[in-house]
Structures are given as C-alpha cells and as structure tokens.
Image (cartoon, rainbow, N blue to C red; front, side, top):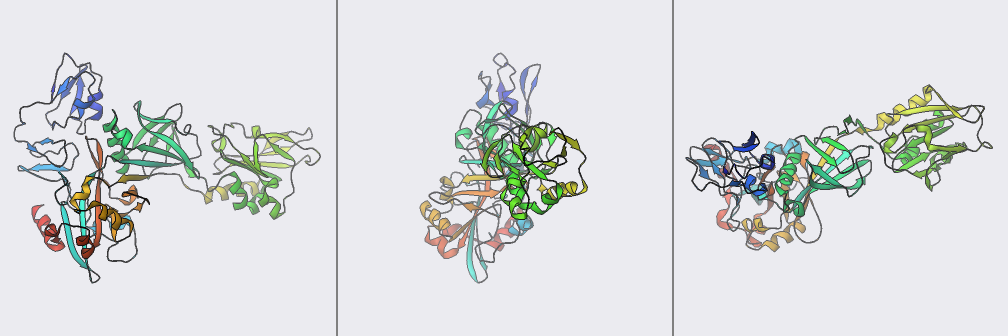
Length: 506
C-alpha cells in the first residue's frame, strides 16, 4: 500500500482495521510498515481515498489465494488472517492440522457413534477457494466397522455473528440499544436470559456495512477468548473476556443469581422463615415478599403487613425495574422498597431482612415504637440465610455462542448437490462440527448452527477483510452417504496417508 500524504488527515481509521497492525500514525499522517501484505483493509475505510494499492509486486512475496483478498506474503510472514505463512516461498498453514484427539479434552465426552466424531478437524485445514474445488482435506477411515468420511475446511462466513452472555444483575442498558466499539455500532443489547444480560454482535447486515471489518475482527477476538471492551449507548461500559468475570462500569460482578426474587422465596424458604419476620429479595425482574408469597405461606409464615413500592405480579411477587442499585434495580437505599406497613398486622420489634438475589448486599431492620424501620446488625440466622444464597450462586462469568450459516458456496467443496448436504445434516445422516465441537443445528432450511466457543480450541477462529469470520468446519458421515449426496470421490484420501503427508510437510 502507499499513502497520498496530501489527502491523509490522520483520522486513524486505517490503523483501527489493519489486521497485522502494520499501519500507524506519525505526525498525524498514516505510515505503512514494511510487513504490509496489501490486504486493502485500510484502503476500504479511508474516508479521503488517501490509501491505494501499490501495483508494483512486493519483492519475494507469495500471493495467497485462500480468499479474495490475495495478500502478498513475504518470507517468514503471515497474511492478514494470520493463517498462512511463507516458508521458503511456499504458503503453509501457520498451525498444524489438528486431529480430534488434539481437541477432545476441551470438548468433553459424547455418545459413541461412528459419525459423531470427525476423523480430523477443520483447524489448520485451509480454505477451498474458489469453491467449486473439493475441500482441502477429505479423509476416509473405518470407525467401529463403518467406512466413514470427514470433509474439512475453514470457511469464511459472512452470515455469522456471536451472542455474548454476561452473568450480572447490573443494568447495562435498554434492550435494543446499540453496542459500540470505539463509537462504531457492532451489535445491540438483546433480551435478558434468566439472570444474564445478552448481546447480539455481528450478523450479515453489520458485516456487510461500512464497519464490517471491525465487526469481523471483534467476532474472531471474542470467539478466541481475547479480552474486549464495549459500551452500550446511554448505558454501561463493559470490559469482558469469555470465561472471565464481567467488569461493568469499573466494578467486577462476582456471583450470578441462583434465581429471581420470587424464585428465591421457594429456594430458601426454610432459611427465610428463621431469618426474620419478613424477607424481601430485590431483583430487577421479580421482587419477592416472603410472608405474602406462596412459598412463605406454605411453610407457615404469617403475613407481616409490609407493603412494597412496586407493581404486583401475583401475591408476594412484584415487578422490578432496571437500575444501578440493589439487585439491578434503581434502589440505592434498600428501605426505599417499603411503601408502608399495615399497623393492624405489624407489631413493634418486628424484623425485616432485605437482600439481593446473590446475597452480596443485605441489610436488617427492626420496626420501632413509632412504626418506622431502623437498621440493626444481621442476626446469626439472617446471616446464615444470606450466606446460603451466596453459596448457592454460581460464579459470574462471560460466555459466548457463535452463530453461523454454512449454506453458502463452500458446500461445493463437499458435494456437487448442495441441497443434499443440507438434507443429510438435518436428517442426522451427516454430522456438522466446528473445530471438533458439537453444534446445535437450527431447524428449517439452510445449515444454521450454534456452537459454544469455549468448546473450540483457542485461536481456531480467524477473520478476513472480505469481511468475514473464518470458522473450522467438519462434515462427517458414512462413505456411502457421502457418495450418495454427490461427494468428491477422487478427492478422498485414507486418513493415515493424509496425516503422514502433513507431518512430513510440517
């Protein structure tokens, strides 16, 4: 690449999207590093057209044809996606081809069946491009007396995204709010799922938009369990990493609630009965009032007369609101949840325990002679109830599900009749895996899947500036079924020969 210094304004857009980070700013002007592979990422985002491909071939570079970017890779260097390295003038995969045994520990046990496990994985396989060619590796072997084929490739998936699950009661923003990476939209907040906030990031509309390369890189980083920072418009600042505890507005969330305020009533009723005359569990979805709740009544609690300042769902269950206070509600002072007390029912000396769904914050009060609650120390039994809540919670963590569609042209590398592959997948005659990990196939047309990224080997995901995440894909089936759906007979290789060849090459 070359820079027209008169046009360059030093906006920094080029440096943000450079896959190899070979471009930077010097004295408010873009400067191209010597390891540039002419991937064109910077050119695509430059608002002034200051960056242009250099038509002069890069000396000693080998053009990579694994995707439409056609990087020019110098000796000892990799292309934009970090997948291929120039070794003595030959492009080879930067990590070796992985067998299932290499990744099995992270995936966990599965049912015993001839086609449930791929013979090899797509990790390190390379890519079929153009897609009318057979897939990079089509391995054949006998498993439990069954002749089996595994077809592997690393597929660029423009139709893909990632769902991020954040275990926290803290409010992060309104559902539907844009999620931003350095002020660029990369997704949105979606519906909450039982004590967790959910982000939907990527998807074809964002990947094909003006900030698509930023989106593609983010998806790959998240899937590879790299740390990442996002912000929600008019909401929270998020510092996250798959497998780690979420950091929200600078505060770490340690525990994931075991249930909402109402569920807590049933889960911990025996402890609440002993803890205080009344127990309130604060929650942004459903607040629980123990003595009015069915669980409290069932176990013998008598209504305390406490009235809550919240909209009732059913007896003892009240709708909460989102905020940055206790239990993810707007309540900063726990007593603010109490609207009043029925003095015909309540009595001086009555105790009230208020806690969060995680037990991380709790407070205890006693009704005085003037009919007002005054703070007191938690009693031993109240402390026990709060501790039981905390001990029952799971550690708060961040997790992610990659969502992709493999119904595109990459199917041509598997079979001459793509719709037959779709049918085989949906009929369980063929097994789709990602890096050896099991997937959930969405019903209906196409081959849309979900996969837990923590089941996939780290660094198995990459991206290309088309832009698209690149995903290791495996199709495993009986050889007879493979041939029936139009598989590439001449491209099949005995597994042992394929592995020997790869070992010799590496």
